[in-house]
Image 1 (spheres, one colour):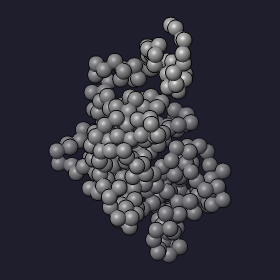
Image 2 (cartoon, helix red, strand yellow; image 1 turned 180 degrees about the horizontal axis):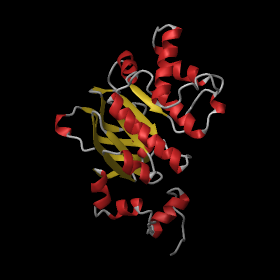
Image 3 (cartoon, one colour; image 1 turned 30 degrees about the vertical axis):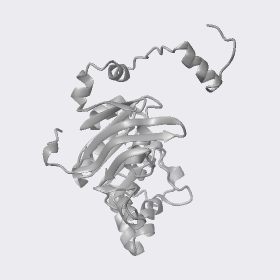
Image 4 (cartoon, rainbow, N blue to C red; image 1 turned 180 degrees about the vertical axis):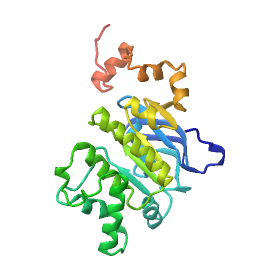
Length: 276
């Protein structure tokens, strides 16, 4: 699906985003726009900063500098009550499902409604069943999470994430730990959600097949920098060596300066009488 971004609203707008964990810089001046109704996939190697970027998109991470606007608002500047209302417009499907083991599937899915609305129990149960229908888990509301397979848990987590019809939906490694067939089914569910509910969806994944199937655009991160943001074809055909190494699963040899290596080992402390 090719989207015309010229007529679409920016629902996430990131400019010159810098983030540190202690003295370590994680994101190094990231710029990114996410448009209404698109599926954007964030990819990168381990330690590239993709999970940190996702947390910024969800308004959960404090930045060092730069700006990030979600649905037109700066989450670090809006009053607490307004930020709370904005978060109600977002849904998150966590990597492991994050279902509460002592509650039934239906109770897990109704949890956002019971916490944030004054709906009666019957209405909430009907809404939960409707969302279970969407993720093809009709009739499973009375089971416990322990009675579901890994793929079913992921879909139940999606049902909970969409129970309040959010404008923004976030996935953290949705295919992790799933076999190829179940992973493919989850990809189709993500596409179905966008088509049926018009959601904007951001996905962090390392699964290439999944990324190439669902993405309108892919952002590739490397050591805190965005190497490229483009369509699937643009990413596949680009001449950036690091991107090609990532999508073709080629390892890179690291060349390390002896002085840098010594600093790494000593924590920056000077060691006398060391010769190379």
